[in-house]
Image (cartoon, rainbow, N blue to C red; front, side, top):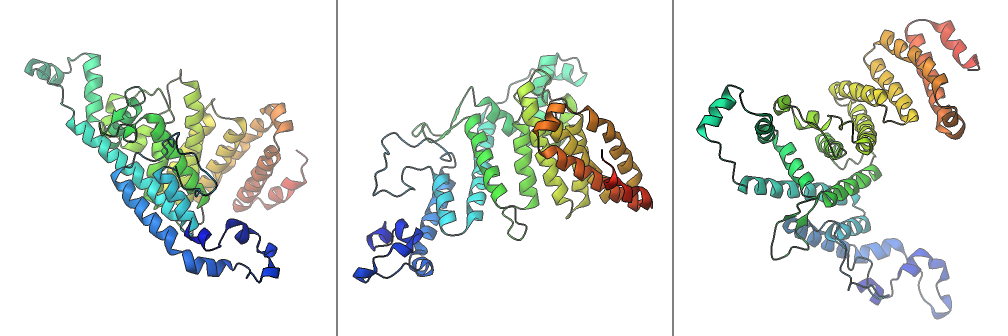
Length: 378
C-alpha cells in the first residue's frame, strides 16, 4: 500500500514503456523499487512467521466470508498465515522461507498432537490381565490396543491425526475455528509443502535437509492409505518401515495413491544416493515394489524397473542389470497397445531401455552387441 501511494503500481512495473513522458514521469526501475521497499515484505514475513509459532493450524483455513477484497486492498488481505508467508517470501526473493515455514508448521502441529496424547489417561489394566498378557493369553482385541501403544512416537501421532477426520481435535475452546485439526487439513498442508519443495529442486539452493525431505515423504506415504494393517512386530520397526506397509486389498484407491507416492519416494532416495549409497539401496527395493504392484500404471511400472536397473549399475552388478533388462523384452510387447499408441512417453521409455542395455553390454565387454542395439527396428 505504501508503494502504491507513492506512485509505484503493478501496471508501471509490468509495463514501464507506457510511461507518460509528456508529463515528465520517470520510467520505473525495478532495482530502485526494490531498494526502496524491500524492508516491507521482509518485516511482514518476520511477523507472519512469529504468528505461526502460536497458531500453526492457521495454515490453509478458508478466509472468512466478510473478507471481500476491493481494488484498494492488497492480494495478501484475507489470506491464511501460510499463504501470507508464501506471498511475502516470494516477494522478498526468499522462497525457501515458505518451505521451511510449512515444514515447521507440520512439526509444531505434531508436537501439539503428542501433548494431547500424553494428556489422555491410559487405560487401566487389572493385575490378572497383565499376567495373562505376559503369558500370551490375551485376546486379539486387547493385543491390538497394546500394539498401538507400543508403536513409534511418529506413528502414534499420525494415527491420532488420521482419526481426527471423524473426531476433530480442538486445541483451544476459545478459538475453535482456527485451532481445529482434521486429517484433511493436515494432508492439505503436506501437499502444499510438497508443491513448494518441487519448485526448489536446484541442489545449489537446498530448502530442506535430506533427513527433513525423507521425513516429509514418509508422512505423505503413511497418509496415502485409508486402510492399513499394522502387524504386532511393527513395534520394533521405525516409522519409515511402517509407512511403507501397503494398503489393504480393499483400499483400491488408496493403493493407487500409495504406489504413486512410493515411486516419488524412491526417486528422492535415488537422488540422495549421491550422498549416501544406502539411500540408493532402499530406492532399489522401492522401485521393485512399484513394478510388482498391479495398482500401478503400466508406464510407471516400466519406468520403475528401469530405475531399479540404474541402481544395480551403480552397484556394478552388471549381470543382474542385464537379467532385469532382458526380462523387460516380454513386457515391451505385452503392454496395452492403446498405451503404446496414445502415450508419447512410451517411445522415451523404449529409448531409455536401449541406452541402459547398450551401457550394460559395453561394461560386460560385449561391444558388438551394444553397437547393434540402435540398428534394430524393434
